[in-house]
Image (cartoon, rainbow, N blue to C red; front, side, top):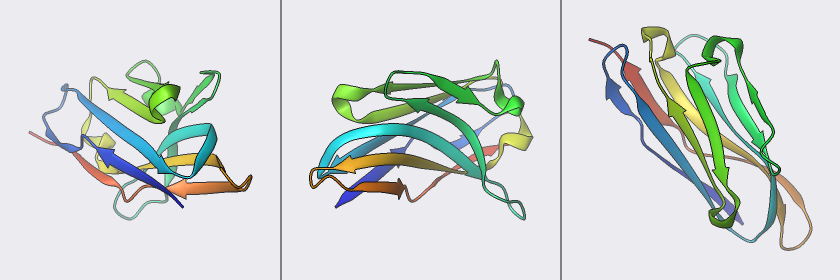
Length: 120
């Protein structure tokens, strides 16, 4: 069907930067919305940022001014540029997409998650 492949997580010092990437593949006709969620230990999964097909964006208050989401529609790929990282940004980051398949079905798809650790 449709898969999301994430990359770019890792260990970074406070104040540092990371860039996450997520590419969608499979029987895709179009992708309506793409986004990033995160889940820290003992906490609920939360929206970090999302972007529509027309590049309208939405951010969690906690990351505004530090994170930037963007997408390349030709590559079915979404990016999350994370700057000025803080220890509280430590979490597993999940890519999410609302996809219209080649068969005309709407699917919400999740990636497997990538760990971001912010620590000195």
